[in-house]
Amino acid sequence: MSFIHQTTMTPTKLELLAGWLPKQSWYAGGSGAPELVRAGGFRLDDPEGEVGIEFMVVVDTGAREPVAYLVPMGYRAAALEGVPADALIGTCEHGVLGTRWIYDGVHDPVVTAQLSALLRGEAAPQHRSRSDTPDPSVTVHGAGRGGGSGVLVHRVLRPVQATDEPSGSVGAGSVGAGSVVAGWTWPDGTAARGVFATDEAR
Image (cartoon, helix red, strand yellow):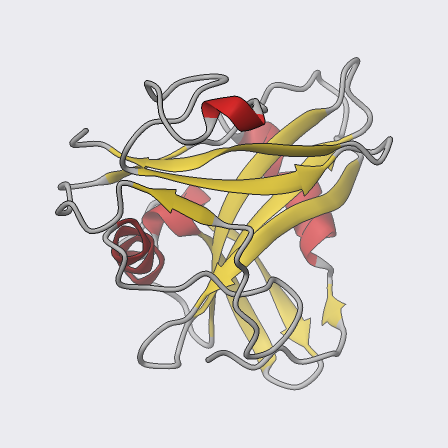
């Protein structure tokens, strides 16, 4: 189980994401800088205990309509070799661990391996801000049916109806087998759930 340090990070993750998000092809905001608030997410454990793994939901409150983004992140003690330049979200100074390199999780092999393990039912989601605390609100549909060759992370999140969650085809507003579903909170306090990731083989 991972240990969550209650300490400072400089710059903060939200500050790093505010500069990184607008450069991504899937960014749905305008030309101005996003106004981000943390809205949800969960963590996974690295079996080797080396890489911090977080799936963070941020909401851009500066957009015409609030937009929820999912950003999987890998926190490392050293630079990751062999990844695209834009895979690095940024570096920060952690109050306990020192310099940390923060990578877009879709390019971090440890993050993608553990997400695949979650879809196979071989990893357990953890609370995003509490040490050694499982997060039962994160559900996996079709776990244990075998693993595909890759996982698709849903970058811009769309809410699903509670009645859609047990079955249906994967897509905006519906849930199917081989998918990870979790929640976030809109700025007005409304709770939402959506598909965070799907097995590309399904």
